[in-house]
Image 1 (tube, rainbow, N blue to C red):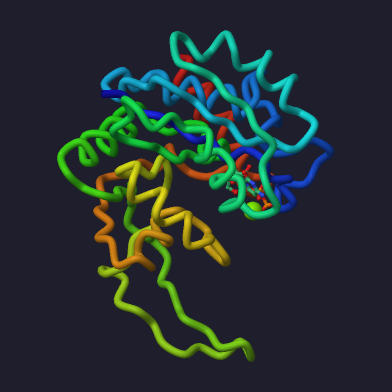
Image 2 (cartoon, protein in one colour):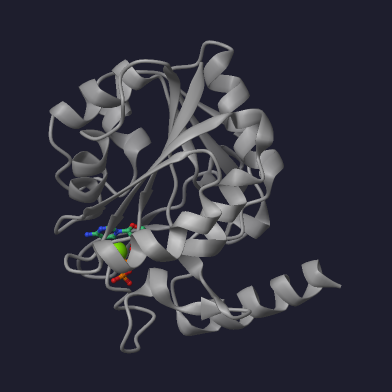
Length: 230
Ligand code: CTP
Ligand code: MG
């Protein structure tokens, strides 16, 4: 049995700014998308057999050419994404083969530097019987719930809070059921499983799996990569 990876990379990166969609922005001379594919490939225990990448409409052919050298023996499918992240995941999910796949990963291109150990932990937990698995790290800020008027409503106990990352891993049937419900307002895939009442398991994430979101994250990414290349 093998793993399939869906990579949502169709966002515009409005918070990052710039002319190019975020997944095509370069760090250390290569796009975030290339780093993301390579990062998943490095997780050899995941047995990746298939990548389905959702990209901005019109860029499919160029991306296919760019990614081919990095896909190894895995099958590479590139598809135009949708308006929201959940739409992009849904169109990609339709292309994931049913036979021979016991785990589907969904991994943001923007989390391009996830360590292989995190990917392997997620896959191992799915193979161990979990229906849905997310990598998580403790939050360091005090988080407050606020009203629309900007007034603090309350302060959840920080020890009960975590920040979750990708890749998130799923039993294929569960992920298909979750996306069949529609993804309105969902910022990750685990949320759709929660709505179905499915238990979502956390495993240890990594600071390196941060999401490139704002301009200063590119500086962090350059520094991290330079450090790894030392
Ligand atoms: N994504 C996608 N399709 C969309 C929106 C987002 O595939 N319609 C992808 C992004 O390319 C990214 C991941 O989902 O890899 C996480 O989204 P986010 O970090 O929010 O990226 P963007 O939506 O591109 O950025 P922004 O919200 O700042 O515009
Ligand atoms: Mg977004």
